[in-house]
Length: 201
Image 1 (spheres, rainbow, N blue to C red):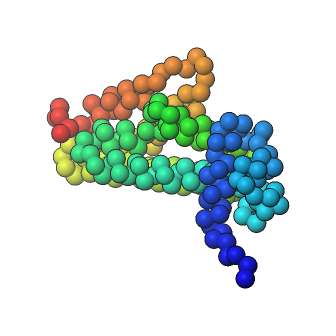
Image 2 (cartoon, one colour):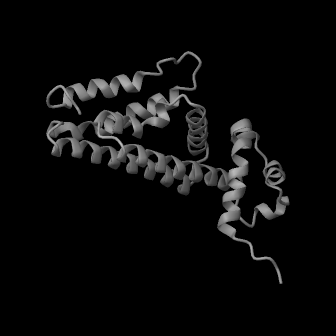
Image 3 (tube, rainbow, N blue to C red):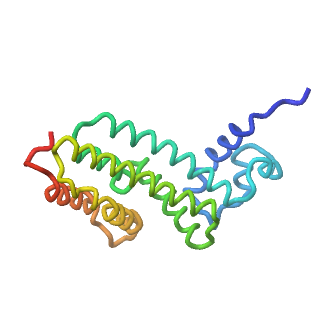
């Protein structure tokens, strides 16, 4: 009897094994042959789980995003300070730990693919990420408004804050761009404008 393959799990396994290669070589220099060899499968077998190299990269970003979302929600739900909740939401932009650097590289490579040869699936995924995080930020701000810690107009700043975050993320790879704390400073300055009272405890 033929062995039954768990296709979703196999797809995840291949994407996971391809992540290190993707980070090392980038999208342009990555080949299906290398991905197959690294995953321990025949080159032709890759196409049972992915339509193309682009589809594999999409699998990588999906995995990274799912993991990142879980960490963000955990951080948001386990702190009471509004500033810390917002910083947790923008951790991808500001974290300099190895995992943060890896995620930024994956995200920026994904953005580059979307700009160079956008597919509807990738563009929709990107917009959905932004919409999801904007809604999470608005939920944090609403929580602050309802608790009497933030001014009612706080929600007006949500979209602008994300534009700043995207800029910091995209420029962070430039050699002469060393404003690592730029986003934190913007968040702190914004909170001074929209907070009611001096304390956020």
